[in-house]
Length: 355
Ligand SMILES: Cc1cc2nc3c(=O)[nH]c(=O)nc-3n(C[C@H](O)[C@H](O)[C@H](O)COP(=O)(O)OP(=O)(O)OC[C@H]3O[C@@H](n4cnc5c(N)ncnc54)[C@H](O)[C@@H]3O)c2cc1C
Image 1 (cartoon, rainbow, N blue to C red):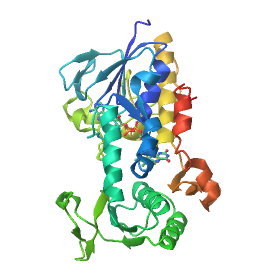
Image 2: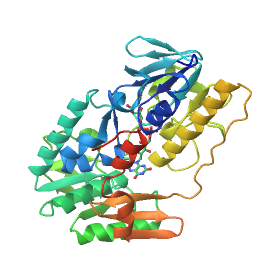
Image 3: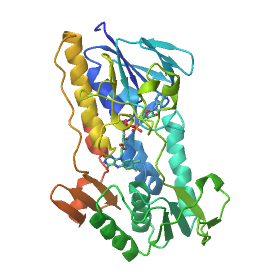
């Protein structure tokens, strides 16, 4: 085994790809509060069809053949070692920080599968469903529900003036009219205070005083950036006002030689997306490989995406996509993502053979 120690903090899209790519050239430790990797894009399909999660939840040990897995959270880090919340010290020569968003769920895959079963039960027993948040997660969930359960009434409340604000207005308009054509009631420019919610809530009041009655609700507002632990770390001064780590062109923390940040936690000037997190992981893996060979190597650089691009699924076969040549909605856009939500692609990237 190679003698350089690499610690990767966070086993999401960015961290999992980096750990996999580096495990043949260094002694890699992946630190994650979960025993498994979750394909994030499959989250909402797993609510309408819990069996879908059987493929999208992948034990870290299924794709990592040499790396050591530590199931815990980073509590702090110095310029030499990471301290876990279970008190372990993980010394490193190179550190990759990939704690995109905070994770509150279970550490065991079986419990996560159970979670999808209970969310599905909650959904199936509701005739009216309220979704709070009209970003990609809220829109995809509304679409999954109306496609699989057309008899259910779906109400979507969004605080912004248009859906999918990270895309252009055309994508928002087309998505809104598609949802309306499926009888989704979309309420824009109104908010529901999620701190007030509980599982027994059935009447909801927006900030304008509008009252909504629903049998179940799903919260689809942005997750918090996973950077609270950095406040107790040697790198705390490198957090920007959004809680992201300031990186240079080679995705190294500003002013550091051996610490990198990738994925949603890095303050690259672009929208935060999984396929970009994968690209970050590629650049950083290449750089660490170069540095291991020769600490004076010229490093590869990362060019942030200038114009937002991406696809939002609208159920199992349709989608809306913003591409370099324009916005498309329908079956062609759906072909990019909607059928298996990149689960097959991810499993292939991880070298998992499905029969
Ligand atoms: C429903 C949905 C659909 C999406 N669709 C798309 C899409 O179609 N295309 C696309 O490009 N992007 C999509 N995204 C966005 C994409 O998932 C994120 O940009 C991507 O997951 C970011 O990867 P990451 O590794 O930086 O962070 P994450 O995937 O959030 O992973 C962070 C990891 O860090 C761990 N962690 C957090 N705190 C700590 C700590 N203190 N110590 C150790 N570990 C920690 C977490 O457990 C987690 O494993 C979608 C997201 C969602 C939710």
